[in-house]
Image 1 (cartoon, rainbow, N blue to C red):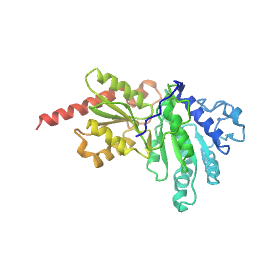
Image 2: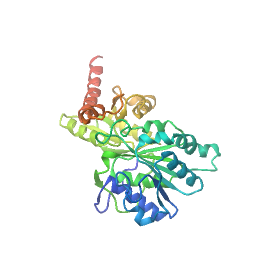
Image 3: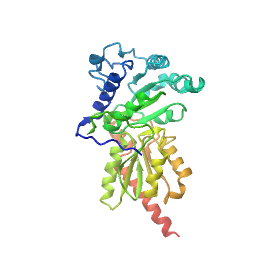
Image 4: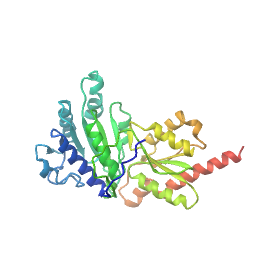
Length: 342
């Protein structure tokens, strides 16, 4: 397992700044790299992530597109198939539905259908998750949809340092990568190394060490899981928080090593419970690591409802620290009952 590299000189960047820096560095490294998306030029994107890149690299490399996700991904894929690495932005992951044919029927399958002769060096940045009253069509967490499509890699970076290192690896990858960025993480700050570095796809990270239970979380659920772990520490529970960082490829070995230490598993996701990626992680643990488990696997997920507009209802739908902590307690207590029951 590769941890995020330590910064020799402490620099604290926001998640958005780290992504912008990764894009700029890769555009400097590779003069052929293009950026495409709605309002990514002069406005710098709806969340300001690409601010300044148009002025630095010019309108021939930072292309504002029409408001058409189908056109954005179609153009980006066409460029990628001609050997031009491209980063396309979908303003909200909800709107990926408008480009599903290009993503799952075209980009995902070119390497296979050409016998490995053609690849698509394409990164699709998607803004995901809730952000406070953005309602049912701008708040979804759809990462599980794409993990079910062979040929796509899926990245869920949760910290500024991971966002930078993983995005740089995604851009250098010869195959299509979907890079999910959570709205509520853009202003979060963290240490980011000044030196050039990459974080390989498929390597998770122990964010907090523990011995009683493994708590798996990614994107905005990671800081909530860490807060829950702090709460539980005051109760005498030692919680290991593990971030997969990429869902495809998934770090099975990293999960196994954590379960060897703890023997219990709780998985958190913002997306609705039904058919979420939590279920895939649970299946991996049950099928491959069952002898390590001391208790039933627990999932803490969003409810199976569209995202409400009202902030109070929105917070009810997605897991908070209390619900996560309750899931951990239930897992530990179920172990006690199993032992006492003979």
